[in-house]
Length: 167
Image (cartoon, rainbow, N blue to C red):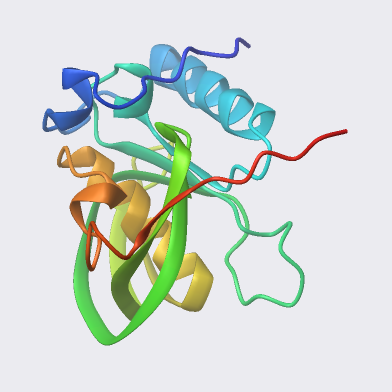
């Protein structure tokens, strides 16, 4: 496994639309393993999308299980994901490995229903809510070349410089 380089804003590859995955093979398994290692190497990382490492394929990994007391599905490998239903809206603060110096307030659906293929190509269906639904929506946006800074409520009032913690 390898830790991959994360593209950062304003790299133009972050604005490109990812292509569907059609082959479920050993190369895909290696990509998934490398993406997951890259996500877990980032402090606080709960999700990653293949376009964030310059691979324009519709693949997302989300795992919010480290956050206590949250409803979640555990480690999710979402290939060619599609949201089929969303309900309610909530404002929440988001950050991103591709926009490392900022966080911002973004409106997202509170509940979503989602279909995606897993790493074997089998179709899976999920209903999720809260933080997990927000994380999935954030990562799915990467597949369409959208960053959280594109969804800020107000660029003037809802973009914040990330705090730097001293040891």
